[in-house]
Amino acid sequence: MKGLWDFLYYKDKRLFLYINKRIKCRILDEFMPRITHMGGVSFTVLTCLFLYFFGQSEAKIAATEAFVTVTGSQGIVQLFKNTITRKRPYLVLPEVHTFWRKLLKDHSFPSGHTTAGFSLAATLAIHFPSYSIVSYFLAVMVGVSRVYTGMHYPSDVLSGAFLGMGFAILTQIIKKLMI
Image (cartoon, rainbow, N blue to C red):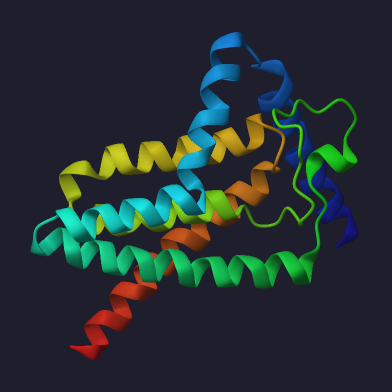
């Protein structure tokens, strides 16, 4: 079993280094640190509030469900981070490109920004299918930005995406059971 984990970590690390170092360019250096904030608490909560206060009835329902999905999934993220305690890549790997002076001290697995981005994207896609490509594209970009900026391994991002989408689906199931 240890051999399998070592192999997966090796692949995870190689993909991380490719995204963080090999595709590094000036345009992405400007774009990625900005897009990463679309998975942050401020952006996701403000999006929910905006939809709730300025949207029509369907937007209000979507905003409420997105808020429940984002906050619920973030609780699971914190549980996993405090249980698994995986160190962030910039704490383990040499010469990782980061973009902030004050780096995070919490753990890496799973990516909370990616989880929030996919929680929001999946909920919006359920309510507004014609915008699903845009919402999922932005969520994917948040995930890629987390690796590009040196904050997470690709497996952190992938697990965050599954967690966010899973929580959105769970919210829909619970909603249907309550009706």
